[in-house]
Amino acid sequence: MPPEHARLSSVKPVKHVIALDVGGTGMKAALIAGDGSLLHEARRATGRERGPEAVVETILGFAAELLAHGREHFGRAASAAGVAVPGIVDAENGTAVYAANLGWRDVPMRELLSTRLGGIPVALGHDVRTGGLAEGRIGAGRDADRFLFVPLGTGIAGAIGLAGRIEAGAHGYAGEIGHIVVRPGGPACGCGQYGCLETLASASAVSRAWAAASGDPDADAAHCAKAVRSGDARAREVWLAAIGALADGLVTAITLLDPRTVIIGGGLAEAGETLFTPLRTAVEERVTFQRLPEIVPAALGDTAGCLGAGLLAWDLLATEVPA
Image (tube, rainbow, N blue to C red):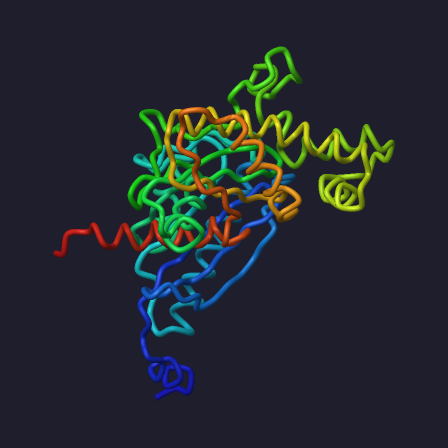
């Protein structure tokens, strides 16, 4: 028996899935076992400056490498794959419909991945909803039957958790809390409206406001939070304006959805209680008849999308009809 074959045959097979989270600048991936343990983790630059076709090829190639790694190190190929992508996603048909930051349109991602991976089943999900799925099942929302996951990053999105699943909506647009207009006539938003929540309370919005107020073009939201903690009055004004807008948006969502828990993630949540203490107060001041949900930080950080993609893959296997 050749040495290589002998080595491979001695590996005890471990059933696992491929999980892949595609972001605008980087991709996070893992091989995940049935008990949720991470067997292997890897990261790769997305390389969006090379164009959408090159990005798709990078995704396919990265997935193929993960398949080969699993076969070599865990005695068998992955049983399924889950991939989370940004933008508009038709999860039912496996199509990445549109992503402004990646430049693609109508990419048959599920079909392309399944073909490259030897025909294994592939689940496609929206990045924020996939991250929300992970937070709901194994993160900050694991004890909540109804929750709202809101990451505060470059923009603001949302995922609506209902009894262990994420509600996508009739057309795949549910949870877009960042485009609730909270300040009519306010800053222009990329969606075409004015005064959307994400123009006022996202990490990038706070960065812009603090750079203007401080006179430092390199200042960002983290610097603003630090200045708030040091007692800077200008920083406090910028910070509380963002929190007021965020509270208005959250109360609108609370009124419509009545969640048990609101999970706040993304870069702005890294400010910890500098964000959460005044935010809880601001929301409490605004509610009238509504029941106040628990407002908590996300637990999984930037791994949520990847872990959620793994959950999608395992869910896919659980629903397969045995031959």
